[in-house]
Image (tube, rainbow, N blue to C red; front, side):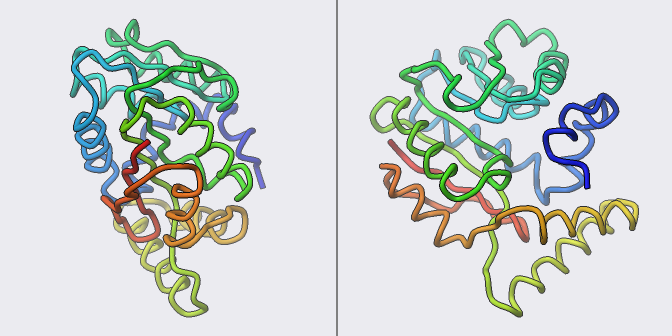
Length: 227
């Protein structure tokens, strides 16, 4: 199987990336709009926002269009994906400073808000805890952190049911059967999916308060939490 690192470095995969999330993530565009609203509840008009996993630029573009005065620091390990982010942003690109790397390569801030969308399911539990703590450390008091990723119940019957529903969503979105099967295989066998309760615990242990579920899309969940 192609590794995640290889996938986000492959020129053809990168070129097609922006087509993927709306087809593979239920309610993706609405989730981005909701994330922008949640960040804006506690960020002023000229806020500085940290976006971890910014490759592709889709959330950066949504946030920038929603808030004309915001500036962004976007972090992603893939140079190719950061190049795509700049392309996706187009004339909005000057408002985003893009950094190649991981959370340790992010500026110290302090930031008025942060997001990490469709990223944490690629790393193990220990790294998730560390990332959440490092984001918390970079935020101003009371700033919002919006996070969304794969998260599903762990029961022997319940999780397979949700994965089947996710497969049905892919088919309804027009995803080819072989591609849909590969996506389900990746989710099942190659990603570490936590339960919603475990995800909320990580946020609390990192020092965030009030983790509140704002988005559920079959096997995906999203929370807003506060520094």
